[in-house]
Structures are given as C-alpha cells and as structure tokens.
Image (cartoon, rainbow, N blue to C red; front, top):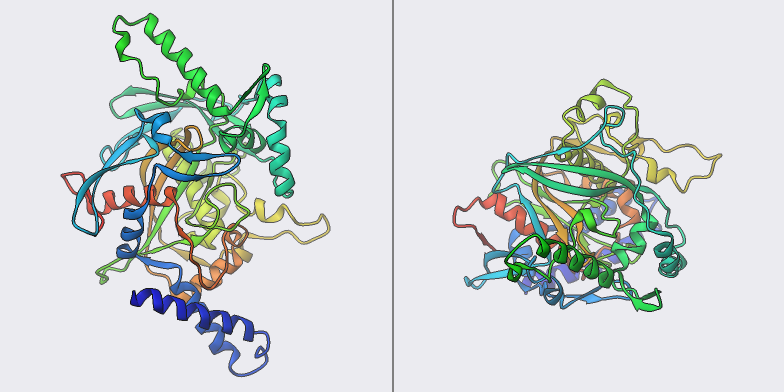
Length: 452
C-alpha cells in the first residue's frame, strides 16, 4: 500500500515538474528540476522482482481480452493439448500448476546446448530466396481487415520479415529450420487478425477457423498411417509446415539490471502506447519481429556471425538490435555496423528526402556489457501459433539520468509512452518471458518457479 501511495504522489510531482520545465528553462533551477524529473520517471519504470511476482501471480492467462481482430478468451478450449504447464509457488506460499498460452518447443533452461541449424544455400546463408504469399483468393478475402488496420494506423509500412516455415527435430538437441521472406501486411491479414471474420467460398470464417480445418486435414492424414486413431489430437496448433499464416519470428527480452553487491536485481518495463498492434496500454519490454538480413554481408565480422548458420545466433543479434533501438543502449561488444539490418532504418523511414539522415550515434547514448541468454522457443496461441523466442538480457545497473536520456533519444519513444505515472499492468507476453527468466535465474532442480 505504501509503495502505491508513493508512486501516486511521485506521479503528481512529476507531472507538475514536466509542466514547469519550459517556464524555468532559462533559470538556475532548470538542470536540478530536469534531474528530479528523470529520477521520478525512471522510478516508475524500475520494478523489483517482488512487485512483478505479485502481478504475474494475478494474471488470468485464459482470459486475455478481446478485440475486433484477436479473441484471447477461452484459448484453452481451442488449444488445450498444446498449453504449456508451469509450476509456481506464489506470494501466498501456495504451490500450483498454471497453464500459459504458449506451445513450448525448446526450453533452453533445461537444454542449453540445443542447436537450430538453418537450412540454406551457399548464395544465401539464411535461405530467404523463398517468399511466402497468400493465395489470390485469400489475399482478396482478407483485404478488408488490412484496410481497417491501415485506416486506424496510416503510417504502417509493409516491411519484409523473416518467416519460420519449418522446424524439424533431427536429434535430441539438434533441430533444422527453413526460413522464408514475407511482409508485414501478410502478418496483419493472418496472425494479427486471427478472429476477424471475412467471407471466403461463400462462408464467413476467421483465420483461426481455417487453421483448425488445416490441422484436421493433418490429423486425418496422420490417422491413415497409424493404427491407433484414438491418438488424434484435435485441439492443437497447425504445424508450421502446413500453416496458412505468416508466422513471422518474434523476439522479446526481460531486462535485468544487477551489480555484484546487490541482493535483488531490478527489471525495466515500459508502458506500450495505443498505436502498437498488440498488448496496448500494457507494460512491455524490448521486442519485435525479425527483419530481413541484408546481403551480401559487408564485413568479416558480419560473415563470421552467420557462418555456422545458427538460428539462435541470428536471433541473439536481432534482440540486441531491438534492444538498442528501443532503449538507446547498445552492447559494447557488438559493432553497430555488424548488425544484420541497418539499425537506424526505421528511424529514417519518416524522414523527407532532403532531410539529414539520422546516424546510430544520434540515438544510442550508452554502451554496456550485455549478457544475452536464450530462454525458450515457443508458439503464441492468441496469434495462431506465431513463433516467439524469449530471452533474458543482463546488464549492470545504469545510472537513472542516463536511462532517461537514452530512452528519449531512442526509437522506443515511438512504441512506448513517456508518461510520468502509469497504471499499465503487465502483459501476458511479459509475464511468460519473466517466468522463463526466473526459471533460469533460480535454477531450481524441482522445476518450481518461486514468485514470493
């Protein structure tokens, strides 16, 4: 209760300071007030594990809300056989099993040596010469939802992204995948609009309906080759190989800051604004979809970090890029010119041709050593099985005045709110990423994640 009251009054103080700053800009009090404002702002972005634990314990993963495009209610009825179970000990010291709306493919906490090799050609190490497209009939049928989204978000661009077309297990800890190119508009029409009704073949259906039909065809084919038909699984996601969706790979990371002499780490979360596609007005973290790597590679370092054709290494670089873009803080051990995508590309999109190009140095204000730990490769059910890779990013604590300065100069200002005080609650994506992060940090042999 005390912390809530403190946050409330700090929010009021911060709002007043923010209003007064332009007035006192030329006075001797400006620098001191700016520092106070930065400290208040960052105070409301730094979360202890105790605070997050309480919020995560309260989330109802089976009721994630409903919009015109996505229905997060009753997911257990649709995918109950794919729901991943985790055992937690909550703040009341009660041990219970919860189900999260993700299919767990690989848990790197349990299998840290797992490799995912990219099936590729010599000319294109990431095999993105293949492009995924909807059928002409599907394109025409789903144009209405695209028009709806573009009307509400006219600045949406049709950027190329990386699709996970196939993932096969070769050995116990070795997988092989196939990647394809697709575009953001295709993702809007499919994964981001799973429950939007459109007319196709004379019937009103959703993408979730079509994926269900596709999965049942898979099951029928499987049943023909197996004697025990009672082993059919109707309430599951469609395989990546037979999916009709864009299935762009998403990455996200829980950011944990700690110093050697600290008893408790702190986590940095930011409230997402109303313009984002999912989890609007929820506490978020560095995340995004994998863009298309640029070829040919320009430097020796660029060639080296894709030489082993490792999907995990590729995704590590991508979450490092997302992190730098959205926080203004970069990994001091990764050269900016070695990223697979020009890191300032999205910031330059809205620039007019005659305007000066923005450079990396203009919005990256801080460099630090960064440990990037893969946690789990999953498929998210609310978006129809969209692949999602969870990471944990560990850094030393960064001074509060630097954190504020970094955020205001970063691309994160386009996706996250800069409000002094926020009542945003934690999103399901953040909660699941956090559970995997705590599983890694605690490293308990009994598999129980302690949230107390």
